[in-house]
Length: 385
Image (cartoon, rainbow, N blue to C red):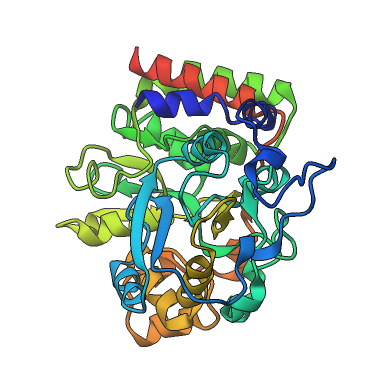
């Protein structure tokens, strides 16, 4: 939709900072910021949450259909009335928070990890009061202390996943294993029936992963080569750009080959009337590891309720319910064992081996973001021509 196209132009760190400055972000975002006497003071942990009475409302701004209704309903019975609003991209989230200048009315947001340093730098999110979230101790340590927030001062894992692909074995009758296999099938059996993620970073990853190039490269020569291959060789074979094909296009057999996130692919397979028709691949040699994170935005009107909810959702039983609903690993200690005991379907699409984890690399928002988006826009234009 047009709004998403606009937001893509704000992806780079430079554009992010420019947007923040124009919207009066930074110290102006927080009532706890400047006292009028010079430099802004540090934002207080927890945005004023002290463990006092929990407010009667909680407003969460999150990705669409990304929270277990059972968990939300159960938390609501403890007191706060929970309201959920959704966004379709990190850019949409960031733009709304920046423009609101601390008055968005939201208590919890769920950005992807690579955007958190910029959110911290511009005081768009506030430190957590971890004394009020003891269940952080029940998150597996391997999903804590990420590069974007080493001490988890501002964020804690909601869930994490990876990027792979799923294909229709009635159309593609050979085994696909790597990203190069994906590209070859796109240009052959699945020509005109292939979809890529509606995401500049994930699509650029397809090229860089297949060619053994660091997908966070800032070398413009790498992007020139990516553009030449994508626009000239891929575009004629691409039928769509869809980050959530599982409940729509996949059920209608619109595409035969889909670049997709593991949880969405799993949902699509489970809901399909012929699940055995589809095969999921975690392709080599490299792919993505992404993590979405619970955060509290500056100006959150109900900080006590926000902290109470974070502690509630991190309790392992509730974390399991979240995982079971959204199909992504929520990082709770022992959650894989719980899934086995309860016969969760297709666990191999949620839980990964150490060898598989070693192939997954975090992305980065860097100085190449404008160029990455430019190539993506050219690819989309060429594919629709």
